[in-house]
Length: 159
Image (cartoon, rainbow, N blue to C red; front, top):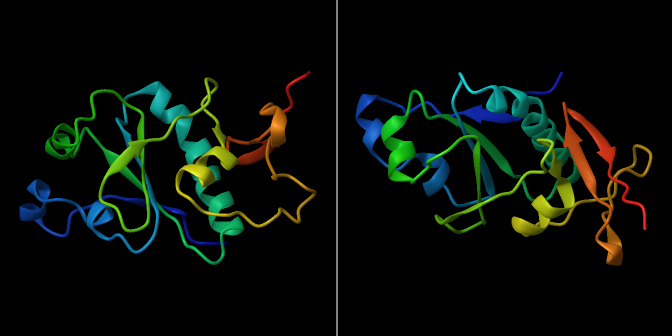
């Protein structure tokens, strides 16, 4: 079994609670951060999709590692306030070399379009050898790879 693809944010000591976290300052690789509240049912429903997204991107981006983090706004209230996180789940993406996060959208059904995510963090994904899942929507904009409940499914939209 592989290591868990999402790192829960835990400051190194109590003083670090008020400082900028390492997942923002370590700019070597692109980062995706999910801010959540453990009591939120929407956040609970998103866990498997977020972990599935992390696994799929890590598997299909061997040359550029992408870091995935999770931050509990119940525990890290000040950090969430400092970053102006007003509702959860809230997902920010950080480009390689940048400390400025931008909002990463999810689908209405709490899934992620992996091609959209890869484009937002400016990485190229290798083709999926497990049956051709991936690739993307092409010119129609109607396709894409969705991550849901840790599984990958292909989104098809009729013409």
